[in-house]
Each structure stands twice: as C-alpha cells, then as structure tokens.
Length: 271
Image: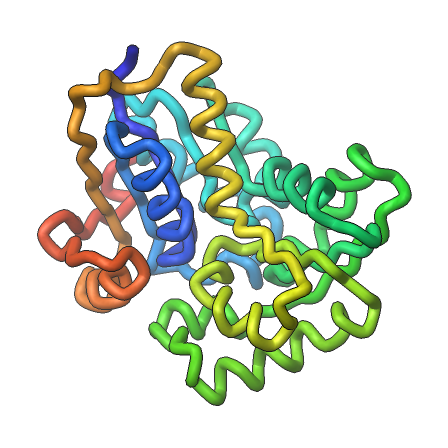
C-alpha cells in the first residue's frame, strides 16, 4: 500500500478528463494536478519547446513525492520522449493505452486520430498501432481549434460553432471509413458528445484520459502501490495562470466545484 499522490499534468484544462477518470476508478487515491495554463496550447510548439515544458512540469510534480506520474497530454506523450524517459517514478502517457484500446475496438481496421499538430506530425499513434496490428490503417487529422473550444468552455452539444468546426475536422476520417476514432488530446473527450453526434453512433470514440486512468489502475495494482481502502482521496490543483477561468470551466468538466482546491503556482519559481 502507498498513500503518496498520483501526479498528473497537462498544458491546461484537458487533462481533467484523466483526473475525472482517476477519481471514478481510483477514489482512494490522492491526486496532484498541474495545468500549465500560462503556456497552453503545447500542440503548436516546436518539439524542443515541448520537451522543455514537459521537463519543467515533471520537476514540479516530483516535489510532491508522487508515486506515479501521468502525462495527461497527447502532445507530451507523443513528442517529449527524452523528458518522459528520464522520469524515475512509474510513468504513464496516453498514446500506448489509447492505441491498445483502439486496436481492440476497430472492426474494419481503419482508425482515425484527432490530435494537435505536434501529435499528428509525430506519427506516435500510427507507430504504436502498427506494433499491435500492422494491417491497420491509421488516418490522422490535426485539430488545433478544439483545444481553444475546451479552454473557453464552448463544449455544449448545441454549440453551433463547435459542431461546425468538429464536422470539418472529422469529415476526412469518415470519408476514409474510420469506425474508431482516438481522441488523441485529453482536451477532446470534453467534446465527445458533439463528436459522437457528428460521427454517428456506429463510430467508437477512444477517450485517452480514461484509457490512461485504466493503465494507472493496472500499474498500481501490479506493483502493490494502491492507497489503503480507508484513504478518502484528496485532489489538489495547481495552475500557472490565474485560477478564475480554470475553476469555472473545471466545475463544468468535473461536475463539482474545486475553486477551493486550486493554487496559482509559477513553475519557474519552484525549480
């Protein structure tokens, strides 16, 4: 048993999809979340900058003696190979668990990937899926505007602008015959109802945050690192920019008020 927290980080609000899944699957676990809201989005940055940001985010979480660190960020998981490979704690990204889930879910072998520009350009999902099913066809589409929609809480199913943007992004995936779509950025599951509506009920959506949480559950059990059953589980949220917008949007995404659990923390001041 190990009551130390799980450390989760993302460029902003998107990683809360992973937090929500961890809260549901592992209610006894303590969580420390860092959202780098001052520098969101990561997906349009150079690989060198993403590596730098990831290293700083990881160093911040390591100060809390985390027993496991999760990059709840498709961009970091895809690009920041050096930063994530140097983590001494058990580490979980989103690419591998989501790829495994997609490979199992597809019926016709055509898998779509929605991601940031950096994620799609890296070919991370294509490479990972090829290890599992070399015959699978992977079609990727860069969706830079979706991060902005989530960060600004434009996620309602009846939001016309969000629907039209999503329709434009996923049309190429549907034209290629994708029956499974990986929401390759943890911001995107927050838009899942709209994406599902546009894609149709026959298309399986893979929630990267949920799959990463399931992998965390498996790792903790395998290494006997779960928190004791009597632990109530606490979550603390840190952001690198003002908390007002974060807390308002987080309440929508998580379904509860966490304004009293959020702290502004400039990463650079702590390194």
